[in-house]
Length: 401
Image 1 (cartoon, rainbow, N blue to C red):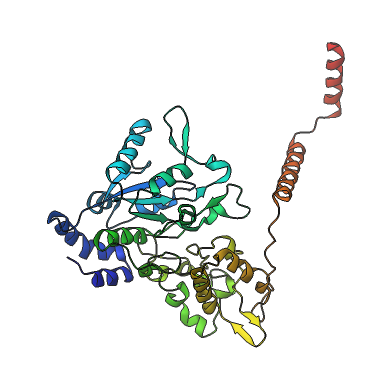
Image 2: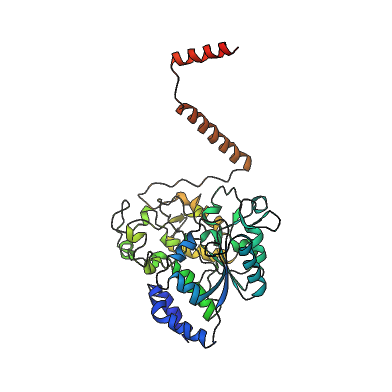
């Protein structure tokens, strides 16, 4: 059977899908047939999500989705991939949770919507003409699973679903369940990250995780460390606008504070990635995406304190370290992006601080003003009647009287 050391080496190479197809699948089939390992049952629940991570998995090339489902995992429930619907689908889920209690992997795609007891995110029909919320189902299935694997940044840390002002009260799965999880972030997560993590669980059990629960084999280095344009940064050659050659740092690239192997792995069947397409990384695999990575096209600061200049590389290390001792990345990134964020690298435009959090009544007041302005604009768009038409309306009203 493939050694863990060789497996990790394959995972850290570019083009994991090719490596899996060439080296792993035959070995996996032999191990399964010999009874050395057993396919792990998988239950996949979608909560507050755009379904992007399911689509990303569907885009896996080699192994393709069919091979993943038939040869790597035993998928017991996924509403998108099931042929059963309604009560049959719910029965399949309940049977899987009961039959494989303590043995299956729960994959959650999407944030946990908690506002008003989760009623803004129904995921299953109930037993008496009602519906079950994502919050309820994740709590139920999560306590019975051997491993919980949030996939995509919404599931790992709230992501875009939890972006300010977060009216749905969305949070990450780990925060909600208060149990250890294996976070596979990204917006969406790369199919290799999903498949590689599943195969490690199948072969060797829990992979090595970093301070925020991500597999080190995929999230062990920053994009800046792996970037194919790193030499531009070292030589001080910076792009002035998107589309130009050069380092994207001054255009807002979040590579220095984002841990992922995108430069080596690349996307769309290992063809390209944002910086390769002359666009900055927006830090979608970061725990504080999108709020802490915004504005996307304003660059990270060199933090200047009395006698100290802190680089983005040190910021990245500080984020990981602070998270490890329990300080939320949201607070950290708010400090960096807010008050400290005014101290920018020389020669660039000063970045304004993020707005302070507003009480709910102020948020509602702003929303009402927006709705009022939209109504006024809608009225302006209505066709204006001519004086003759107005006179005709008055005559018709008089005749009715």
